[in-house]
Image (cartoon, rainbow, N blue to C red; front, side, top):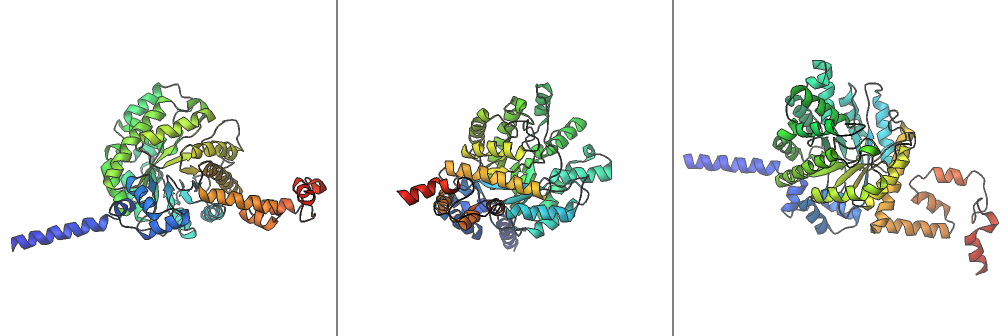
Length: 444
C-alpha cells in the first residue's frame, strides 16, 4: 500500500512537472512542433524544422505567454528583423486612451511588438487596455511596477524590497505579458566600476538606475542576479521570455563600448546559458548611443559572448546632436546593427530625450525603424525583403502608382505628395516630359 502511494505521488509530481514544462524552447527540444512554430515558419517562409532547431538552441525565440492572447512572432537568426514600439504613461502625463491610440498606430505602421513602459499610478489600467487593443506580443519592465508601488506605499523607490520586485514579475506574468526586461547584469561590483569610470552620463537606464540606487542604499546584491533561479522559475511557468536589460548601456557617444558596458554583457552571457539550461526563452538588450565605426564590433561581441542569443538594440543612435530627429539617427544605427547581426530593433521617436511621444511621433519612429530593418534584411539577403524591392522596382518602371503606394511603409504620405499637382499617369512633376524612363521606353 505504501509503495502504491509513493508511485501515485511520483506520477502526480511528474504530471505537474510536465504541465509546467510548456515553453516553446522545451517543446522544440522534444521535437514537438507547436501551432506557434508552424505559424512563424509560414510567415517567415522558412522550413519549420529549421525554425525548431533555432528555438531548441536558443538562437530564435517566440515570445508568447501561455496566459496571453498575442499572435506568434519569431525573433532571431535567419528571420526578418523585427521592430518594437515603446508606449506608456508617466507620472507627468497619464491618459489611458491616448496610450491605446499610440499602440494601435504603432501596429498599423508595422511594429511587431509593443512595450508598455508606464510609470504612472494607473499602470495596470494602461497595460490591460493596450493588451486588449492589439494582438502583437506585449513586453514590460516589472521593476517599474515595483518602483511605483514602493514610491506610493513606502515613500520612495529605494524602499522596495525583493518581494516587491518578484511580486511585480509574477503579477505581470499572470496578466499575460509575453516578454519582460529584467536588469540582471547590474551588480554591486559593476556599480563601483561605473563610479570609477570616466563616463559622462553614468547610468541612463531607468530600470537600471532604480536597481543601482537600491543596491547602494541597501548594500546588498541585485536580487534579480542573486535570485536568478527564482526568476527563471517564474519565467518557465508562464513561458515569459526574458529580455536581459542593458542597465549600463551608454547614454552618449562618449560612453560607448566602455568597460562597464562590456562587463555587464559578459555577465549577461552567463545568464543566457543558465536560462537555456532551464528551457527559458531569452534575448539580450544592447546599446544605446554608439559611433558608426563601433556598431559592427558591438554586434559581433554580443553574438559571441551571448552564444547567438537574439539581440535587441535601442537604435543605436550614431550622434548626440539631433534632438527632434533622433528617429533618423537611430535608423542609421539600426540599419548597420541589424545588418551586422542584431535581430530586434527598438524604435526611437522624434520626441526621444525631449518629451513623451504623441501619435505622430510613434508613426514616424516606427516607419524610420521599418526602413532600417528593410535595409538590413536586403543586406542579409532575406528573400521576402528582396521580393518587395523587386516588386517596387517593377511598379516604378510601369508607373503603377497604386502598387507603389501599397508597397510603401507609409501608404498615405506618398499619395499626398503625388497629388500635390496632378499630371500625366506616366510621369511626375520632378522630370515631367524629360523623364528618363519615358525617354528610354519611347525611343529605344
